[in-house]
Amino acid sequence: MSPLDGWGNFYVIVGSSAGALIGLQFVVLTLLAERPSARSAEAGAAFATPSVVHFVVSLLVSAVMSAPWHGIGSVSAFWGIVGVAGIVYAAVIVQRMRKQTAYKPVFEDWMFHVILPLIAYAMLAISALVAWLDTRRTLFVVGAATVLFLFIGIHNAWDAVTYHVFVNLPKQDAADRKSTADTNTPSTEDR
Image 1 (cartoon, rainbow, N blue to C red):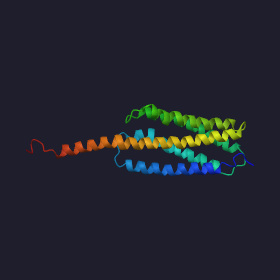
Image 2: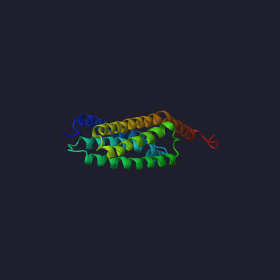
Image 3: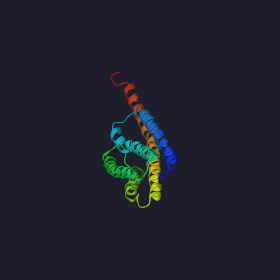
């Protein structure tokens, strides 16, 4: 009996959720793209893209873990690769968040876009190293990291939608109304 037996349903649930949320994120971003601001591309790279990446990582780990592996070796190597790549990606996100000027990140943004993902990626990387020592506990750590990616993505997607709906769109509506009023106001020459 493989130590991976019994994890199939867990990863089917997490992977399915991640896949559905990836699709939903694209729908929301498409709807919001109808009214882009000038600085939305750099903010999207800093805030929206990582959410999709975390959903994809959750889906990818779920897919790999659902395969009928006979041992932990190949799977733990995969965790190590994803973990190290994710740590590098977290550094890229830090640079993107600092570089963009559309929004000033607050502590919550740093927590959910950098700190928690870094913890989850570190959990995967460390799991690769200790999988042979305590496989059973390591599988729970990998499961926790996968769910953490899912929750991070959900939080970040919700945060982005609420920001656009309650902050960004009202600002754009006000600017559009002002622009329309300015073009409809007769000039002194017309009077």
